[in-house]
Length: 367
Image 1: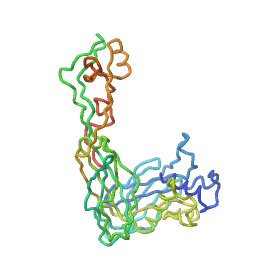
Image 2 (image 1 turned 45 degrees about the horizontal axis):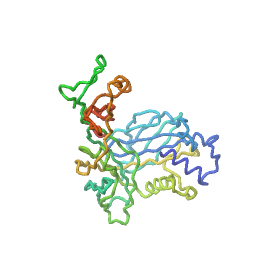
Image 3 (image 1 turned 30 degrees about the vertical axis):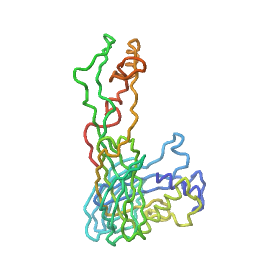
Image 4 (image 1 turned 180 degrees about the vertical axis):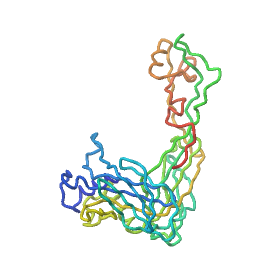
């Protein structure tokens, strides 16, 4: 997303004179997006400026191979892992008062971020859940001790337990072209887990909120979503930004949105905190944020679940058993037939197998 946002900003503004088709040197301009969360796994993304239509018509997005390091001013360093422009740095304990910078090695050149003293994180005090007729809202309350400048960002990870719509009660025997009830209904894949996470940063301005953010919505989902079926877990991460970090990311967010004014940036507003050590005049885009992080988990039961329309089972005549089986359907359970007796309905595996519906039988862990 950030690579596309950079391209949108450049294509619509007059910050730099250039060819909008990105011919020549601008075509190889490096973009660095680093979110270093001390005390948690951190991410660094590398890429190049891309024409606006890349990724929309089947073209591949260019991401360079490189090496990523986090350096402590005292000399220690942590090496990142990953490839193809996507890297992670493991969690570590910071030294008191130490400053850090990111080092990136790409194409025989070395790039650095500025030295940054980690900003203390706000304290997450509560995660709560509310709902209206259609949505569930995940809300966070957090307090700053006065060390922050009044700007923060959040991200979340989530995982949830859900169940398949049906339990398989019948089986099909292709040798006799018949269906028979299972002696023991197969519920081994009735309950599953799924997980997701966002890399998008939710920006919060609490300068005028007396250092406290109350019931801020960081995520929402439909009440008919499988997240509401059995058990839902969310892990919210929050960290403070300084004024420059907030302003930079807010500018990208506003100008990269559909309703943003692409001509609003003033010259120089897009300057980040990354530079090329081998060629100080080389343009580099991106911003590296280094902050302490606050983390809290929240759990929601199924109290907000709203009726979700199940995928209907299909009545099938014996003459079509073999054909339906070849399409991946199986006999599942009895269904009502208007004007007649109940018959066995057939369905795809996702109807009775939560693994086929995208889940896993093992409860995952947060990253």
